[in-house]
Image (cartoon, rainbow over all chains, first blue to last red; front, side, top):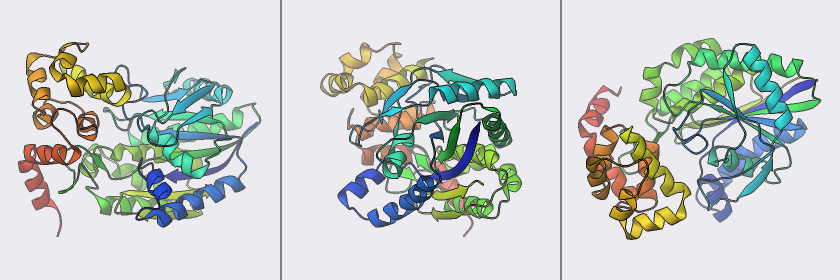
Length: 275
Length: 101
């Protein structure tokens, strides 16, 4: 039987690995935050990591954009969009991906399956810092948070709840960790960029508020606050919060063992232990 | 459908190094050879690096900014930012006025 053992929420800034490598400004802080996640992940001894992320036009482009999708391939590589980052070829847990998809579809969630996906920075930039050996198979799980229309936050939360049930029903012996990748407020190349950059954090107070809600396990209130208007104000990448919402659905209002934000980046780091 | 063609050009810039270099050295030829085909207006706007107008037409910001990232069509990331801010100047002023002090 599969067992949920831990979870974490992380940022996926593609330049963080380079800052760490080059000992640039902020490197020590970045290392500390990822180390908090890495230490707790290691302690939970996962056999598989399910990574919730949003496609940045790399896996699906906008040829055919699934609202939810899982990669059922046996291997994948990347990051395809930032060749200057360390490149990895990674084993995927195809059997678990197929089992989860089947159970979730039976439960009423239209989860697509892709048999071939390039991995981008949203998965491999953070994992390269958390687990550079890449010795734990992954299940990439996509939520259409960046390319409209986005699924409602409530739907994402219910998906997470069903995923927890699916894991309990799964006959495969697995210790499973969940990782949610993404920011709460970020703008890439759009109208809400900063005055001096091509990116921006339009709503840092919203990002802090999200952290406060998660810390206090006020998940229902948070879900109600994630409206289309709020996501627009928070930036065109702010739909990445939905990855965290799916993960929170699987955690059933557990309190995080660690949570810390970087409001200037519009994101946070958090971990959960699951008994 | 046409905005899809613009998005696709931008995506190829990220993933297809040969296309990226062709766009750098022979922009009009590379764009005219794109599939699906660009409209003449889109072609003109891309050659001019008019990312503001292309964004208004619905091209993805995530993808458009890659033209600046790879310094194509007269753009850099800084210039990309300037052009987007200029295009959305009125909205940005309104958002700034709405922001609580």
